[in-house]
Amino acid sequence: MPRPSQYRDFRYEDFIPAKVQSLSAAITQLVSKELEALHSLTLNEWRILAHIAAVEGATAQSVADTSGVDKGWVSRSLNALLERGLVVRSTDRNDRRKRPLELTDNGVATFEKAASDIRSLQNRLLDAFSAEDHEAFVRLMTRLQRTAETMRTEG
Image (tube, rainbow, N blue to C red; front, side, top):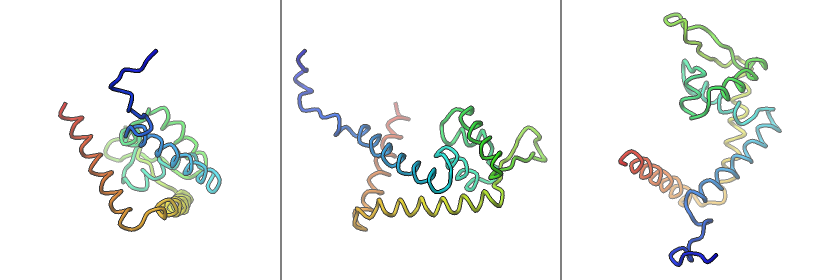
């Protein structure tokens, strides 16, 4: 079946969403491999630790909301962290329905080591750029994200 003439020059690999997805998949695989090898953490568990470290009073619901994933996924990964003693759940004194999450001492140590290793990995990736290219890359990615979000909300 012949291709429509207006698409003869279209290259899927140059399509921005395809590029971003491919880059994301490659980096995600690198990060996942590093986390598993060095810290016996899945990427999902790492994301939960990072959220708890960054958000005071974090809950399973806040993890699900900010990551845009199913609460069941959060629950399974969170249970593994609870079992390993990296996270504890408490009860909010003002609202007993809320179950804030906190890192244990072991959780803090694991998070700090993993964060350092992730930063090191990121720095190794960014070594491919000059300082100017790195700044431009971040600036352009930020601009593209803002433009896409504006377009999405406008219509």
